[in-house]
Amino acid sequence: MSDYRLEELDFVAMATSCEAPATDSAPAASSRLRARLLTAMLRKQAETGPLLSLAESKARGGALCVFEELVVIAPVGESNRCKNPCNVCHARVLAERMEPAPIWWPGCPYADYQKG
Image 1 (tube, one colour):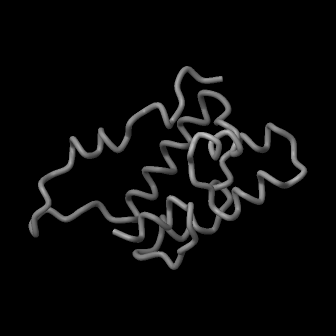
Image 2 (cartoon, one colour):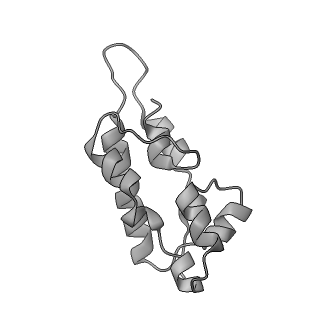
């Protein structure tokens, strides 16, 4: 197990403290950039040890996308439940390459980035 978990780090607070004032001259980061940053952070996190299982993430209040929900109920070993299914998800690929990406399902952080 790693020394820290992604949800223990307050990325929202860090990002908020670094944001420029919202003005017409200071555009927000593109959804493509935010998607690539999320992917990079999750991959770095996975290098330090297994991630929380999807069931445990859900129990802690995390939203799961439809594909993660399938992994939770699928007859797979616990080691597969601790991997990031976003690595093989088409939503990640679309979000990293298109602005805006045509993804919309609830619980998907990549779909959330398309909202603004």
